[in-house]
Amino acid sequence: MIDIAVLPGDGVGPEVTSEAVQCLQVLSDHRGLGLRFGEHDFGGIAIDRHGEPLPALTLAACREADAILLGAVGGPKWDGASVRPEQGLLRLRKELGLFANLRPAKTLQGLEHISPIRPETTRGADILIVRELTGGIYFGERHCDERQASDLCAYDRDQIERVAHVAFRAARTRRGKLTSVDKANVLATSKLWRQTVTEIAADYPDVTIDHLYVDACAMALILEPRRFDVVLTENLFGDILSDELSALGGSIGLLGSASIGAEGPGLFEPIHGSAPALAGLDTVNPAGTIASTAMMLDQLDFGEWADVLRGALEQTLAEGCRTPDVGGDARCSEFGDQVRRNLCAALRRHDAQRQIISAVHRCCA
Image: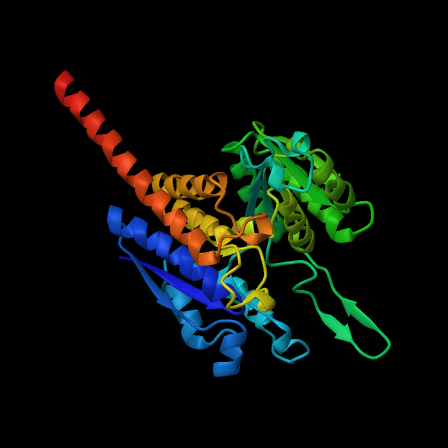
């Protein structure tokens, strides 16, 4: 059996994770993948029930799982509190050693009109952002009083090296180009970042590398997205740039992500937030969460079925079944149902093709 720890979280998290889990269940049932799901409290709901965003039982379940599916955390209910849902996410990443966040974004053929950017600009764009997760300003020492506040941004060479290797290896499987993003003209951490990435690049002579300042990159991602393949950057910059990149597809609700470490389970989640105003309305887009589960299947060595699931998801969007964020009127549950119908049809076609190939082989034997 393969154990999946499901952390629905807050806001719309339970809705999107439900649709994604049902898609995985269809695949598991049809192909005997042996996926087993267990839900656990995490985030704001865990604060309400247990007094902390990452209870010991949830952390233990995540450590023992083969993969983790997260919905979303946070909401105004916990704003200003001493204990916040987001603290649980930062701690979970640290406890599991998840140092690289992979966020793919591309323009789907035939759906260029969904994007607010001109179709001739976005057509064919396909970008993977690799974001470092354990260092930078999110983890630095903080100070705040009535007159002054500060956040320390710190990186060491080891943190940069390990995420750089992830990005270069990813570039090798794609189009062989890596863009490292920093602010080396101003920040000391960025100077170390650029120096370290440049040194690591020598191990990957088959990958073309260039460097961009983060402000120039933010502009170029919109004006000329096809110039990019893999974008490697630090924690804060990666958080911002990957959200900006959601404009390519037309909605932040379309994008999934994977957070991985050197070993142990990966964490898979949509890049959107908890959207508490939409909770319970059945209108949120589950596509990003379903896309995240396809990335999960890749990590679990079920790449063939990951591609089938991605195909069913893209077919659903192309057919016009879309939630309000991408100009449609489908409900979250209706969208999930259509993905599963397309998934089942794709599995039947897959079986038929296998039968034909098997029959040909028997005739030629």
